[in-house]
Length: 59
Image 1 (cartoon, rainbow, N blue to C red):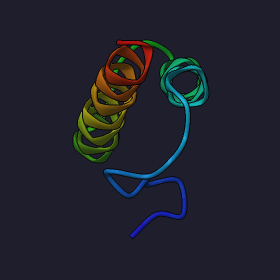
Image 2: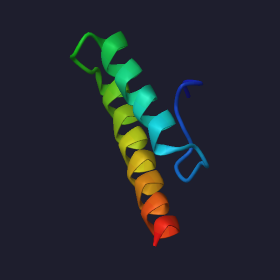
Image 3: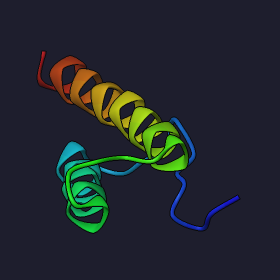
Image 4: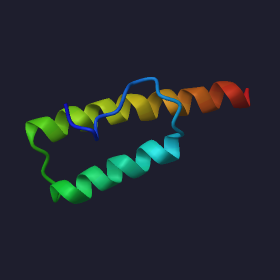
């Protein structure tokens, strides 16, 4: 498992996860391999959870 892979449900902010998503796309040159696609999907799930957590906290 790559050290860049994240654990869903981690306590990182949406901005931190978004930065990792951007960095992944930059490293990949705009075309993701199967492994990078898997990492991207995990990051998007984590980002969405962080966004939802922020919305709930704001309410």
